[in-house]
Image (cartoon, rainbow over all chains, first blue to last red; front, side):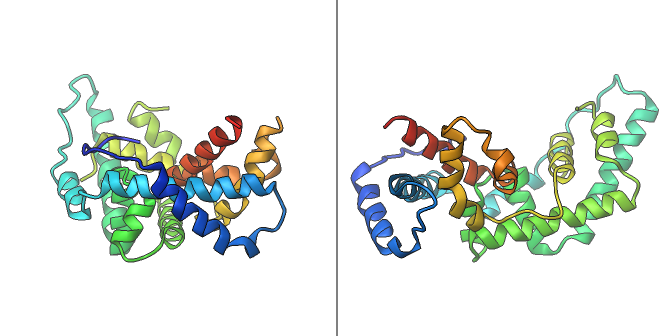
Amino acid sequence: MDGYGGGIEANVEDFAQEALIKITSNLDSFRGESRFTTWAQKIAMNVALTELKRRRWRDVSLQDLFARREATDRGPADTQLTPERLALQNMVLQELHRMVDEELTDRQREAMVAVILEGMPISEVARRMGTNQNALYKLLHDARRKLKRQMEAAGLSPKEVLAAFDEG
Amino acid sequence: MLNRGAVVKLVRVVAETRETEIGCDECFEQLDSFAELELSGMEASGVMPLVGDHLDKCEDCRSKFEALLTALRSV
């Protein structure tokens, strides 16, 4: 997990109490598909990690992420590129920009920028967008599928795009 | 807004997108079974491919899985 500064005081006792409450209140959902201890450990880990992520990201708002993204410049032009290669890259960039700006809903775009481009944990983005992690994953899945269809319709194969940007 | 790094990230993520993917809740529900399969030496993704696929894509769920494996291994 990338650090965003700030001291993370992981108090095992805090987590243990909440974990115990979650485990006992969810006992009827244990279906014996794994060992009880595994199931309980899973819940405990979830409690601890969710809280750790919340603390680590507490000072970062979505606005911070978007502002940072807007300020992102293209980077220096690669002078080793042929004019054709540069033109191809610019065409792809333009087309992807259009897809993201015009084909995605505002919420889909926000979620994609925050989770995929800026790397904020999906649970944290969900909280800030007033939804839950599961719903946000599905929103992102819809967005990804939309972009995939758009790229196919535009004749842009991911492999070719990545090759154009010199990536495998 | 989209620089080279962003394009690469975006296109990679789009390329790996499948029509059917389970969400975080469904993945979490099966995570204990998945972890035990993994620990037993089986390739859990082969038996539970949708969970494996979700874990490849979702950093939150992946970190929970790794933490669970670590906890189970240290017993």
